[in-house]
Image (cartoon, rainbow, N blue to C red):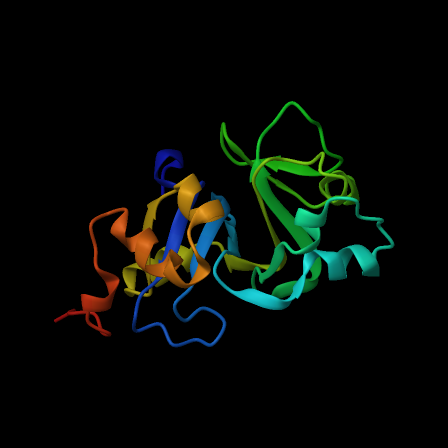
Length: 188
């Protein structure tokens, strides 16, 4: 793939026929995609824990009540003990951030959680444990095999659409009613 065809800052939508328990009916935000592989965060698999639970585990005192009840997502099966924050970019510099686009960054350092706990963090954020990863050429092969659709990123879906609607709404970005798609590819 040439650089312009990489899928950074896009949604990866599981096709109805993808039955892998980790990825069935998921929407993954692609944070990094290159000739070496891809990394993404699943954005529609909330866990039973809330951010307040993470604060307690990390001994972070929270003064922002809104942040305590923020959901935590299962970001993927790789390193499920590691936390990631997808957030809107700002002038604030965090200890460990990856700039994804002009509007989105991915941060994995404690300082952003401390800021969020005080109500001083980014305006929009999604926190996940673990990530989804693909080796060199693996994601491209899976797309050809009809496992995934990809669509442009939309802030409204990432931060504001109810979790139960993200799979459908992400597909709607390119005019597809994903519930009407066949479960198998029509390769002849």
